[in-house]
Image (cartoon, rainbow over all chains, first blue to last red; front, side, top):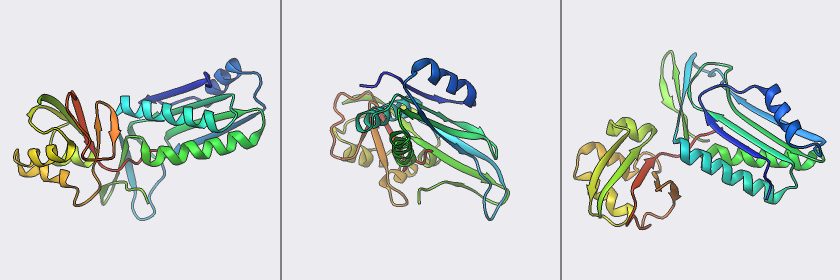
Length: 141
Length: 85
C-alpha cells in the first residue's frame, strides 16, 4: 500500500511549485512526474460569467482516496496527489490538480489518465455554468 | 425506521428547495423511500428520475441498487450524475 497519497477537497487554489516541493520531500526515487491541471474554460456559444462547483465534501474525499489506492495497486507509483476545488470559479481558474510520480514515465502517465477518468463521473462534484444568456448544470458527454 | 437526515445536491437541491432535512421515515430501502417522499410534496417527484439518473449515498456510501437496505441509516443523500474533473 502506497503511503504517499495526498487528497484534498478545498475552496482555495493550489500552488504547483509548493506541491512539487512536497513530492520531493516525500520521495527521492521518482524519476518521472506527470502533472494534470483541469481549469475553467469559456464556452463556445456564450460568455461564461463563472462556474459554480458544488461538492459533497466528505464523500468526494473518500471516493478520491479510493481511486488513488486503486491506482497505487495497479501501477508502481512513488507519489499521488489529487486536489479538487469547489465554489465559484472564473475563466482560467484551476479546478483540479493530479500529480502522479513513478520511477519511469509510463506508470505515472497511465495512472494520471486513470484517475482523471474516474474523477469525471464517480466523485460527487457538480458543475453549473452561469453565462450571459443561460445557466445550466454540466452533463457528462 | 425513525428519523433520518436527508441531503440533496445540485439539481435535486434546487428543485426540492433545501440542502437537507430531518425526516421521520418508514421505508426500509431506497426505492420505497423515494415513493414515501412523494407524499410530502410535488417537488419530490424529481427523485423519480424522469429527467436524469438519481444516485444515492447511504451513510456516505454510494449505492447502485435501489433495493439496498436503509435500516439503521442516519444519513441518506440524493444527487444527479456526477461531473467532476
